Length: 253
Image 1 (cartoon, one colour):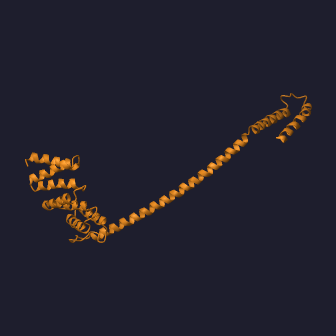
Image 2 (image 1 turned 120 degrees about the horizontal axis):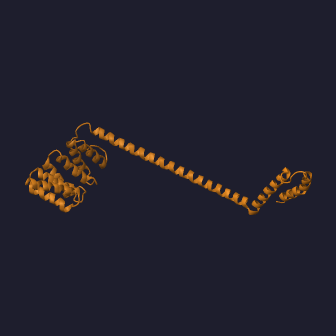
Image 3 (image 1 turned 60 degrees about the vertical axis):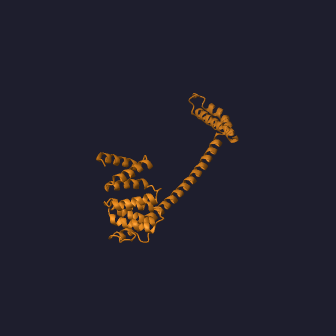
């Protein structure tokens, strides 16, 4: 600041001489005077900025912004790394799942070349879930005889499986869809007696009513359908039971 003031004094010292040398000119138009006034104005502005510490504040703000930028950059790099790790894990999981599905499909293809022999599992050496799914695929393919064999073998091999109640129900269904109502009735009854808490219980009881209806055992059909209404109200099975009871009344059965 001292050097700025010295410069200012120098200019003020030589100003009279310059003004004297230009005495014949209009002071308002003298370029030297104009330049001096401009320098004086700029010098005063700089002094005010320095006095207010504005430049220091701006420098501190710049430092803060640079530090924040560095921190954000570090956070972005961390997030990018985590995203890459997540993508790698998802890719590994997908590849593992794809491989397992391919192995299951190969087993199914190997076992679907011909009819199943009695007592043969559709996926020899596979898990209970593998064999259940394979048996269910046979049912969806309308290979009902093979599906019945597969479900029977499943129940013999995996009697304690959590899928046993479903397998029992679909075994009964494989008989029902082929019109073997006596066999189907016995298997649906097994669902109720052996797996009373099964989610298939309502459907099995409904199908017992249907089987007795097809066998023209009207009282047994009516009793089964009414049990569905009492024991499983507000379900799709109850609604279907009601429809069949209405139909029986209309038919005079």
